[in-house]
Length: 253
Image (cartoon, rainbow, N blue to C red; front, side, top):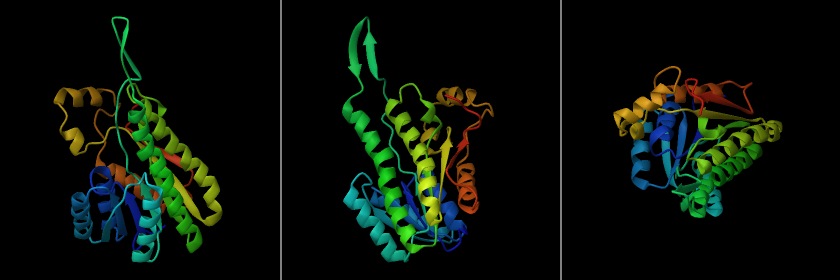
C-alpha cells in the first residue's frame, strides 16, 4: 500500500508510540485520524503531524464504548471520505501479582477491576476498532491494512497477568483477521515490541534502565524510529499479512 494520501486511524495517537508512528506516517504524506481520550494531547499531536507535512484531525473517543467507536469511525469516514489503514495502538497497563502471600498469610489479590480495565482497553478496544475499520474498508472495495500493537509480554510476564493476556489476544486477532479479511483485500499485521525508549522510560531510575538493558541481547532499548520503520514495512509490503513482527532486540521474558 502506498502511504502517501492514504487515510490512517491511529488509536492512542495523542502521545508516546502512537504519536511517533502517526508523525512518521504524516512525514510520508499520509492523512491521520488520531484517536485518544485527552483533548489537549490530541491537539498537540495533530499539530505535530501537520508540522511533518500530513493532514491530521483529532477524535476524542473511549474505545471501550461500542457506540462511541461506531460513531467515531463513521465521523472519520465522513471527514476524510475513506479509511485505508488502522493502527490499533491504544493500551493500558495496571501491573500486579496474581496473589500476594506474606508469612503464610494471603495479603492481596489482583482485583477483578484491575483485570477488567486492561481487558476492556487492550482487547475489547482493539476488537471494536478493528471491526469498524474492516467494515468500512470492505464496503469501500479498495482493500486496506490493520496493524495491532502487541508486546513481547504476550509470551507471559511475571506481574502482568492482565497485560500479557491481552497482548496475546491481539496477536491472535492478527492471524484470525488475516485469514478472514483477505477476501476483501484487507491485510493484517502486528508488532510485538520489547522495551522502547519513550518519555515514560526516560523517567525511570538509571538502575532500572540498566536492569532492562542487561536482559536485551543488543544491550540497548529500542528506538521509536525503529518501531515506526517496522510499521512502514508492514503497510508497504503487499504480501505481508497475518503475522506479528517481534521488534525486541532479542529480548525474551
